[in-house]
Length: 74
Image 1 (cartoon, rainbow, N blue to C red):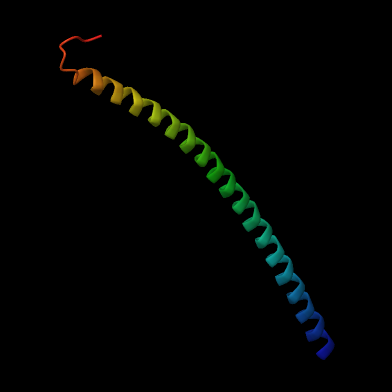
Image 2 (cartoon, helix red, strand yellow):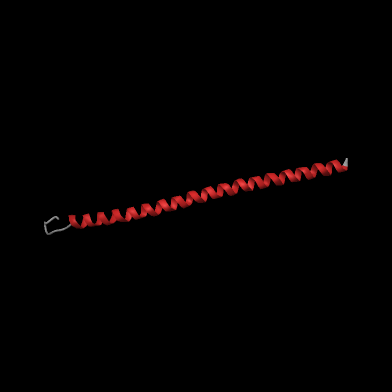
């Protein structure tokens, strides 16, 4: 009876360990997916920041032209 409990307990430990390894693999895959999405978002943000800088420069130039008090628009 004691050896049966020992074998049963060892089986439970092995199954729990296998489940833990599986859960860790799932978490690692999710972390990798999230990091890829983060990197893509960072690339998108950089591209949008460049566009925003260009647009701000264009607006500043248009503002300068509109505030020209000489009366001559280009």
